Image (cartoon, rainbow, N blue to C red; front, side, top):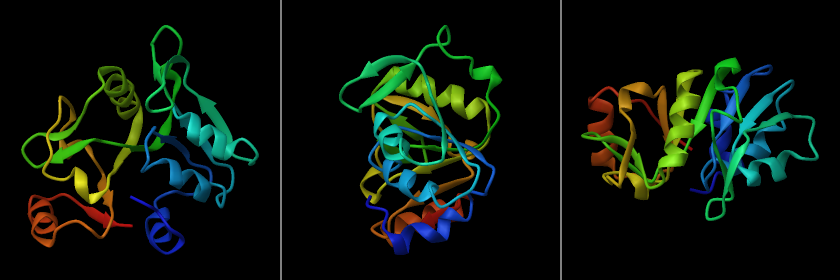
Length: 177
C-alpha cells in the first residue's frame, strides 16, 4: 500500500499531538513515519530501521527496540532481556500483517516479529493494523491475534467491496487510506 498525501490524512486524525505510538516494520507502516513529523511532541517506539531512518533528522523522539537484526525486513526482533516492554505506555500501535481473515485474524511468517507485536499490543491502549488489499482472505504460517483485538483495519481502496462488507458486518472498522 502506498500512503499518499490525499489518502493518509483522513486516518492521521487518530494520531494526536503528544501521543506515544508504535510503528511496526513493513512497507505499510514506513510511509506513515514521514507524516508523523507533522505532529508535535510525538514519541515513536519502533523496531523498524526504515522508520528510524525516516525520523532521524526530525524532532520526533524515537525509541528503538533492542534485539536481533532481521535483514529481510530491516527490523529488530525484540528480546525481553534487552527491552523493558512493561515500562512502555503506548497510546496507539500501528502493526503490519501478511494475512488477515475473518476466521483466523492476523497472521505472519516470522515468530520473532509476532512476539514483538504481541508484547507491544499488550502495552498499547489501541492497536491498528495497516495492510494493503492483497493481504485480505489470506492465512499464513503463524497467528498474530484475533480481529477483536484491533481498533481498526487501515487499508487501501483496492479491497473488494464484498470483502469490506463482510468485515464491516462482522463488526470490524475499516479505514480506507
